[in-house]
Image (cartoon, rainbow, N blue to C red; front, side, top):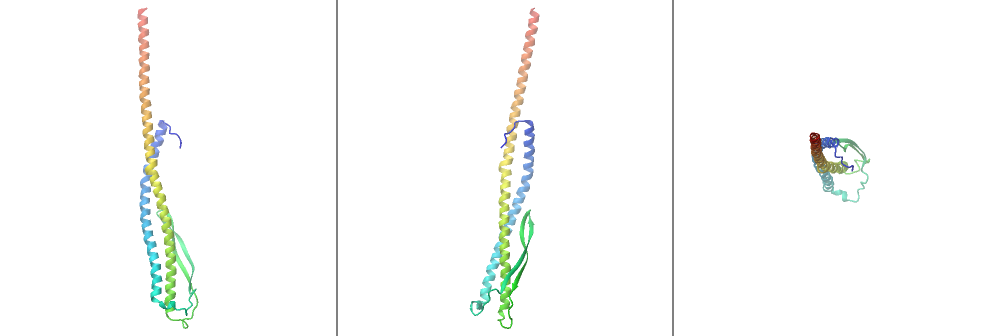
Length: 209
């Protein structure tokens, strides 16, 4: 850290820095509060997405108990082909957003398979989509949580370190400059007094001669 210069120029610099810090702090704190709200929303979305996955898996088991019958070989019936994620900007933070999802349904004979297989296909597609939504929701929550930690660090830096330090520096420089000014006044008065005494002595000497 550079040594503090006890000068009028440095006083001006510190005052300008303090103004800047005090101007930036409210906007940083506002962003912190906005991000904290977004984190809460992301947490709710993530919890809802996870619950939706669990609910779908439970419903599949309840609605289609026949899946337990080993006679049916349904592996690979529904597979996730691809999904598209776009970027969403929330309070200056770039977040993933699920734009679309594409599942592949294996060919199967609707005549040779039980009618409930159609329902199963839809349930499996829904479950695949919800799992992706839960994954993306988790990513959003992680990114926002990190953003909140960083903005809190910046707010604390300004509030706890930069602003108090600038105020202390300003006070220290003012005290030094004030003491220097008083010392200069006293020195000047003493010099004038000595000059006057010297003039008086010279005048007295001239009169004596």
